Length: 443
Image (cartoon, rainbow, N blue to C red; front, side, top):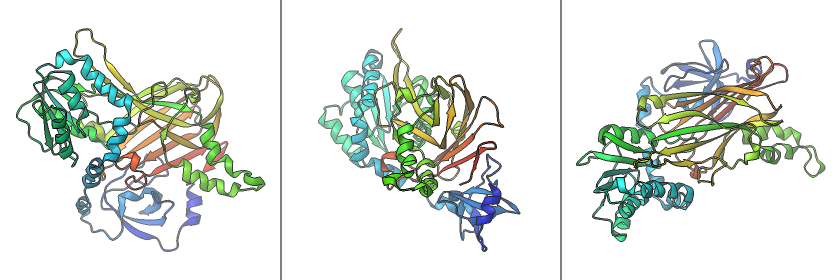
């Protein structure tokens, strides 16, 4: 791979400053420190560049570099690392709220949580963090009898939430507070902290940090978190129709050979995750596995910087391994004696939600047989600059034979909320595949 990149190098590389440190997770990635000056030889894509530091060469994430910056890399903080203006601005419009409220599986799960715990909620103090239009707060006020519900919303939607609370006759119970969780002040500790903080692949947007900070500030000892726990699930899968639509199509369209476009198609369609994917249960090559589990009572903000999970799948049926599909499940513990927990599952065996699932495609399918083992790890690493972004790295092998097995590394960078892909989302998704016996592929 390195020799192929060196053939493409420009005669006059450009100098860039590293805004923060980056540790390469692969021999083809360049490791550098904040303040280092890198020479960029090839801008392979908008996301990853082929760069050099003191004679060492490798891929560097473009978002970590800035041209013409001074040594005071702290200047990067002049641009809001949380992108709050865009983030909260998006929640100040109805588009996202329409999508979320139209998601019956999501909304009814929260309604069921309140309804099934209505007796235990009586006279309790509740915080609804990131309340949006106040739907969960209204459920609490109408279906239970809490003493007060503090509905906290940082976006401008809070102005309309106050109107909705009054319109539905709940103003004596629900108090709407506009502001960030890190900044608001409450007159008392709360008994229950409820929030719908989940993003694609569970953590994107990192609203969960605000929930943890609110927990540490305002949840009384012995108080309840809803959701109480969460799990990220992964499964190796087939994606025959998606592969055919985007790759096989170029073989003989209208009787013509368009195969020279296949590398471009791979770069355009498979080097980014497919959001809003709906996997069919039959496309799962194995039994899904929970790879990451979060306990909302013990999880700390510092834990969010890097979370790793292991997996080992036994292939149940022969077929083509096209990639991995991910989804999440959250659990709401019951406050009632011998009461059952409520579960919100966004996987293929449940009713579809607005999150759907996320598909991570291999650059080309791998044939697998029943009984094969696919093992590896998934690493969620938070971006040190843009705090609502993270990378996801997948390493895998088949049957434990590293000499005859494809290895996959995938990194993705999300910004804000996925329905606004056209103007709010900034992705990078980087695949490198190495197979000594079968093929070599370089971005």
